[in-house]
Image (cartoon, rainbow, N blue to C red; front, side, top):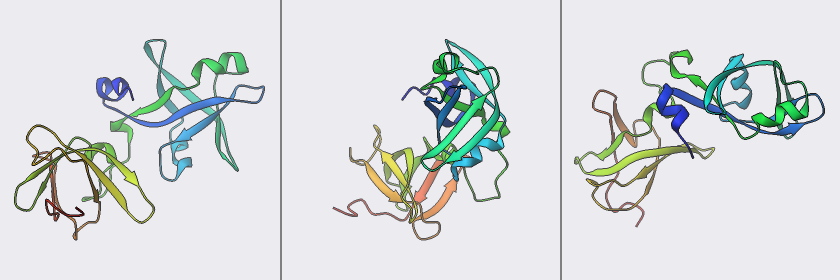
Length: 181
């Protein structure tokens, strides 16, 4: 996955445009927000089109049985809309609503070092998974990790996640080295 849009512009990818839907420039949309229709809280989204960032203005959207479809201002035919297929839709992170103290967006946790309560490094958060029961940290090893294992650690506040230290870019977890071996 190319993260250039995210890194260069401190933006957060909220979705990806799918194939053309119908004859009037509508497109399928894969939303990464929860719930999926929250992506439409933002009427203007950024996309990298032919090497430059452009603002796409949502003028209509619909929820269908198998997902979401969207229409952008100025993309009124399948031929014109087709150039948007596969593009990621992003928003500057500063445009996201402020969360309550102790709550975090996933992108804020990605890259943080994960240490257990004994100070042993497991690596860094590569990404998070939504499992239904609870979110899961996918921790990839790095040079200073205890070993080269990827770990899946449940994001359970208080019982597993003991401390999130944004200043030091680390998360302290109640997790043993050989847990689940």
